[in-house]
Amino acid sequence: MFDDLDLGHDEQDRGDKGKHRRGRRRDGRSGGGRGKTVLALMLALVLLGGIGGGAFYGFDRIQNYFVTPDFDGAGTEDVTIQIPQGAFLADMAVALYDAGVVKSTKAFIEAAEDNSRSRNIQPGTYKLRKEMSGELALAAMLDPQNRIINGVTIPEGRTAKNIFKLLSEHTEIPVKEFEAAAKDPEKLGVPDWWFKREDGKKAKKSIEGFLYPDTYEIPPNATAETILGQMVDHFLTVTGQLEFADRVQKERGGISPYEALIVASLAQAEAGTKKDLGKVARVAYNRVYTGTFDCGCLEMDVTVNYYFESIGQEGKTSGQMTASDLDNPKNPYNRKLRGMVPTPINNPGRDALEGAMDPPTGDWLFFVAIDKEGNSAFTPSYNQHLKNIEKAKENGVL
Image 1 (cartoon, one colour):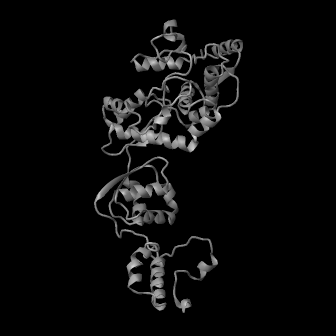
Image 2 (image 1 turned 180 degrees about the horizontal axis):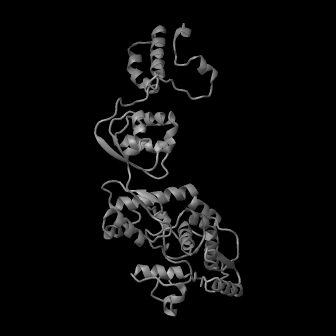
Image 3 (image 1 turned 180 degrees about the vertical axis):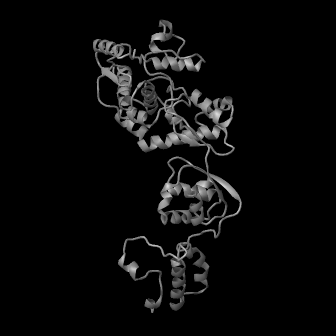
């Protein structure tokens, strides 16, 4: 008797165990395999004499396991949704469901699984409609005309103050609004534990370091708070993928993730090439944490320039800096200050984060750029460092 029932599996299905298959209509839409499965179950229940009132009572619940809740059609009113950086298909499905675009997350995920182009969906803002079928919602997201392009690129190593200016120029939101929003990093999404330090210094809660550099789609009617929150969220996504906090705590010994983030910003500012990012980070660790550098300080001019920017003063080259610039007791980023500076001095990118998380082994204490390509010479010896400086001068770098 059961051989006469179509339970949704043809002869090819039986020969293709382990493969995920779906029937197809000639028009390309999903076939009726699930509907036939449900019908077959009902017929089976009837034939077995089990289709009483109690069975009907639970049937609506049972069929949800076989029929995907889905809207039928191209949708109703317009709606915009935001797909963040690093979002997976499941994250997109949730965003669509929360916005009322699809009837279930499953409807979108199944449509995406059936379409290899779904992997091409880019982060950004999309103009869709409420109550769309999963298949049509996917098609709309794959259509470039439905993507709202309003992007701004934040380069690696920019300070928060510089980023506010860039964002203001792009969005016409006043800089003061970005500054106001940045005063509470935790409200923007930075977890409190990020501000813990292991070096005995009191943590200063600053947005600096958490505004991840990348190209961002600015949603319509965005506010300073939503834009900065988007950047913080991307920072948390990237550092989570890197396992930055866990690896620093496990591998750097007594150094907090926040202190490592500061080091990443120093490396971003000082390194002239990608390959030197980790070496500069190692120099910072060696100077401050190992006890091998006499003053236990950073002695990096970039921290002085960060202070200059914070007070509205133009930066200077190393040769232009005076003795009072280099050792100003009023400067909390004083290059002679013992220990690590209070906060990051810019917003580092992925390579700098990786360099601070996993720097190469070395006893270097000094480095200097020695050619116009940005390559630096590293050494533990001050005498050798002086020779490297002479080489830099010969190459027209200093």
